[in-house]
Length: 273
Image 1 (cartoon, rainbow, N blue to C red):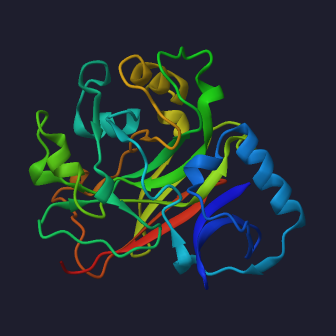
Image 2 (cartoon, one colour):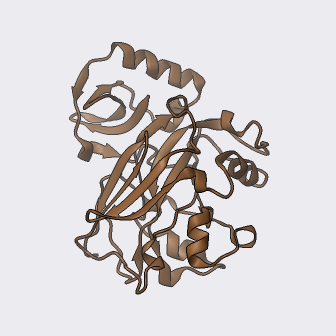
């Protein structure tokens, strides 16, 4: 299923997205409260008998508008590490994005800093409490997947204060919906494409990850309790704006589109702050 948080005419509710249509679940509770096994069964039953209504992408909100934790992993793609000349074994980083970084999948984005950069990423959504899991069982904690644009202000990135460069207001648009895990046969074989105003900048595949999803979940959960609704952005492939010479930062008028096979696409216009 493709599960959305959607602004219907009379309120925000969970929607089940079809081919150019959406089914109103009638449920106003947060999607993060419905992504355990019983909740997904309930939504599946609604999807099977619900009325399909016209679908408008601009009505989509972030699938999990208030995640309990939004984590990002730095330098987890071999092609990205190669282009910046870094050693994957010693420089992997983890950071968090504050709740006000969350933005809708088609929201406008802005920064008053000049070194505004894009990072198209696969995001994992945790479906049940995960603490001290092993890689062997980590897949069982995943409710589904989203697309993330981990927008970054490069001039503020410092190993000791990554949140300053990663935590800007609206700098974590994601979605367009939550694609449940059963729909993706192999999350480590998905093409990922990021374009800026129609020009392809990132073209890679999730098989380029250094640590795979299950290893990441196991690593993070040794120290952190990953509650239902937690988002883990799993790293960006090569081709970020910082990798060009000279760098190609985002400017007002640019449109950043991130597509991942099987998950759809998100698209964000850069506007003046």
